[in-house]
Length: 431
Ligand code: SF4
Ligand code: SF4
Image (cartoon, rainbow, N blue to C red):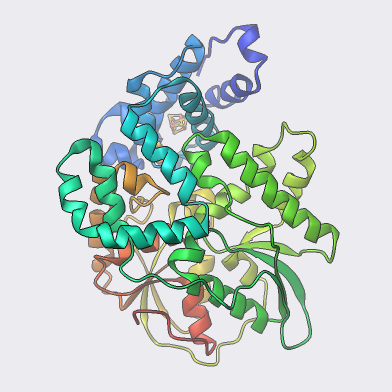
């Protein structure tokens, strides 16, 4: 694709990066066929190619983002299905991240939209605030129907509907510090305990810790580790996101330079995609670029790390599991077979979801902000899953688990909870 940027524009890192990415696109449109929003809306402006053209125009004109382009960028799930399909290696993720930051810097959204984004960014990444907000949402749930009647308040209705019926107390098994294995130590890692996982399903982090300890792996949970920053990053709020990225880089670097870390383990694939990109996100920060690149280089999804270990299963369960591959797992991190292989090794009978490349509609806070498209995608996903007759659904991302759980008709659990169970750990909730 030809671009027309001035020398002055090309002197800025954002435009330099955008130019490199845009020039790789050959307009072929292969990406449109696998884009969930194009499948739903049938509008070129809601396809990857359409968004790429809009971003190009926005950057070339050097103007603020219009309401029109903001609408089409907001509808993008950042599922990265387009990156899997693209034959030319167009890095859509980095392009749309820059475009979203530009929208945030130059476009004034309507008051309610702006306020909601601000509130989400100030609550969700902080487990204590998130837990309190969920307690409030649980009580306000009956108001969801009323909010749903007013278009501007639909995100509030979606938020209330998504609030879990059961709230778990803070896990006592996940204290900050070192969790040593009972037998001789074979490795040392850190687990990103995160914000959503820690509050919505603490059993996921607990199961991760147990499986690692059983394999002889020491786990350290650094006191200053927090949210990975992806929520604000996807909202275009770069300052808040990078503050969290730097805090995590500091926390893990201290461990790397101290007793050492073989890996940073992520059990929410949405966070994994972001942490693996820390090196890129901080590439222009002289004080952090090298440290961030090191952190990204040793970051692994839990299934990638477990695939390197010898695991044994003392309590295999002969259950039909349908594995839902989160977009951030299959498109963001290109992890496709490992989780299924681990589940099979543990004795489960594993099926794939037909049309599994299409997003379930979760996508961070997308199911709050774009609830209608998110619900369409959820219903498609559930219909496809039902054709596989599962007894349980497994996924590697808390967002997908929350999105599918209330209407799945069978338990939706994390892959690691099933592996832990097959090793003699507790039976996952709902099974
Ligand atoms: S990230 Fe997903 S929703 Fe966005 S353009 Fe690519 S395929 Fe479409
Ligand atoms: S598939 Fe790749 S090269 Fe083709 S239009 Fe989409 S982004 Fe451009």
